[in-house]
Image (cartoon, rainbow, N blue to C red):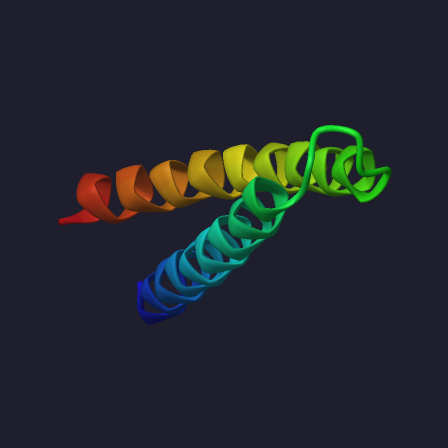
Length: 71
């Protein structure tokens, strides 16, 4: 169980870091004009990051379920 708890904590920290990075990307996008070519690249990066966040969130839920089942 300690390993699962450590995994849960690490996953949570990773989600938090990615969420902060996502917020910074969105701030950068908002500062750009719609015609700026960087907007497309940033949008693609945001899309990839949100896919990763979705997978991390699912992993976090699975770890939480595993911990709850053994409690």
